[in-house]
Image 1 (cartoon, rainbow, N blue to C red):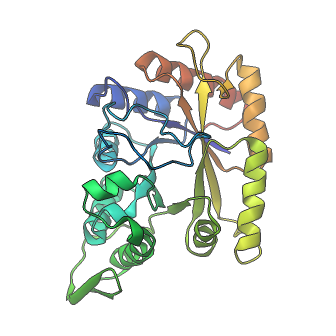
Image 2 (cartoon, one colour; image 1 turned 60 degrees about the horizontal axis):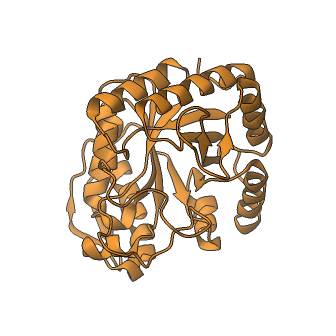
Image 3 (tube, rainbow, N blue to C red; image 1 turned 30 degrees about the vertical axis):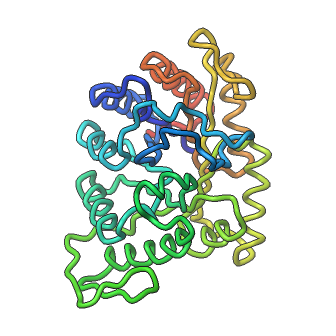
Length: 308
């Protein structure tokens, strides 16, 4: 199993210097990748949309907390690192014109020498769709067609496309193209999302799963898909972690009490079939991100999960 860290793109004191510092520390510590998530705006008033990320359906961070744009953040970090993979989990494909998104992702992959990892999903915050003037009820069709059009852009030129949501005709040139298929990891817990992951993605990405839940999810994907998971299919899950001595932490999250305890938890995830654990701290401060990386380095060394 590989280890990753959430980068500080969504904190009270976001800055380019802090993003790069944490990314470089993660790279030096032997972590596989640094990740951001994807939101453009949040509602200023009450939100009536619930998320599946939390048990109570409420978004876990303040809506007015500074949030950097995801792909711009990864491009910035790419310039300050050399080996750290760069992940967005998940990129909300229906928000954006797929030709523009395909160009941005291809550019990022080319400039980072093939380091991009791209989670893709429907999005969940209806008020955000409304603010962006994107039809919330059409997001599934826009996701499926958007992915199909992006993959066409990345594999051939000129490009034409005829769909219900998007049309590219007459043909356009799409160059340069990435030097490899950009890996896409499908988000979502519904049967339809898991089927899309099994049928057409390089893997699946989820949030806040315990080891036993990872094992169950892997079985669900195999059962709902073609009957078995391709050997190259990767499962990713995020996990919030409390760091004693740095803030109060959050109830119900895993608390790092020692390197040995963390290493044992990492092995439980690996035994459950997880391929990459995306770790993040419940405290959004530079000291907390740095401490988390130190803990992951020590535990990862014990568990043999660091990048050489």
